[in-house]
Image (cartoon, rainbow, N blue to C red; front, side):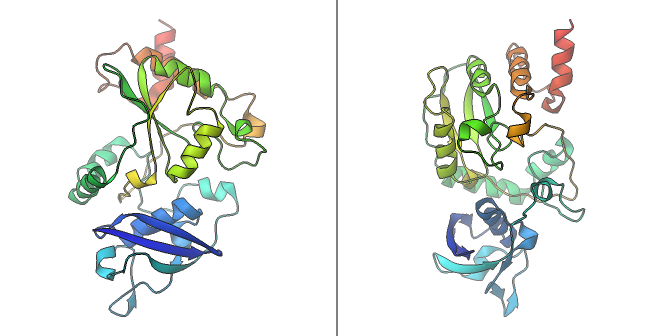
Length: 279
């Protein structure tokens, strides 16, 4: 059964309907973070009780017996400093993000509770196909935030925050890959940003489909490792010198020649590219 709640915070209401009764309070807090920017450890959700006591993070939503669209008041402040938001979580934080080391991810992805979450997402999430997949093409999934677009800096137009070489990169990638755009935000936001950047209806490439936060699950892991990837931030200062997508396009061209990707470690993509270019 799906759980739908409305979070009241800062004079606004935020609707969340992507969770199930098997998801936990922490899963709810992660969804709230996506919508509001308030970190889970700073959120206080009022009125969520189990047997008269405040519900802990690991409590399943089903045990709260919430009515559909229950309104929950939240107290908590958003991080004002970008550096605070982007800093690694404190040592005791056991939420794994998408840059975790592979050994841990293998362990995490085979846990029964996570496989059950994935099965529910696959069953419930509806992918809206924008363009049909092409036979023989691999799939390239791209994150929006800080990969294609600096979503935190201020600007008069989205074009100012677009990562350099974005359209050239997507045009080149489209020759060998079908492209999916992904973001841990709402589809409304992704759709608006892709239109503003001229990605949705670009004549040189097509987007197969887009995925929003409702397609994601949260997972828990004992420790956390970070893969180095240069995020695109402070667009006004870095626009002139950022060449990451230009180089990444060359890497994708190199690996497109391979029959099998299983021997690749994408976190070493620059090393792989450097070896190929010096042969």
